[in-house]
Each structure stands twice: as structure tokens, then as C-alpha cells.
Length: 66
Image 1 (tube, rainbow, N blue to C red):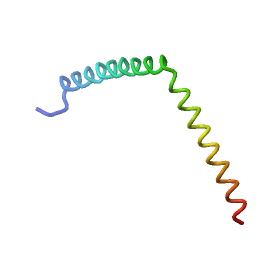
Image 2: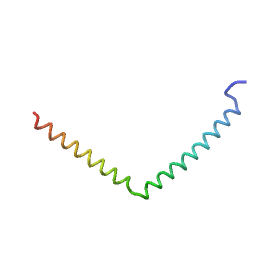
Image 3: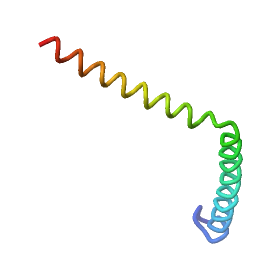
Image 4: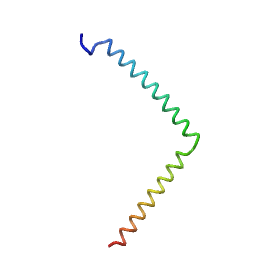
């Protein structure tokens, strides 16, 4: 009897279907809890502002070194 047969294929397919459903539920729960706090948008805005300032500072510093 080989490892790949109809029974094992069906069991694997069912495991993938159930696993996907469980992961989707967990992901929806995580997204819902982060939307309530609102800290994700603030963190993203701060990161973007920090990136812009770092780029701007580096650009100004590079021009004066020459």
C-alpha cells in the first residue's frame, strides 16, 4: 500500500479545508480587536513620518558633505 492513495488524499484535503477555516476565524478575530483600539493607524502614521524625516535628513546631510 502506497502513501498516496484516495483515503489519505481525502483526509489531507479535509484537513486543509478545516485548517483554512480555523485560520480565517483567528485572523478575523485579530483584525477586529485591533480596529477597536485604533493604534494601528497611529503607528503607521508615526512610522511614515519617521521614514520621511530620516530620508529628508539624510538627503540634506549628503548635500553638505560634498
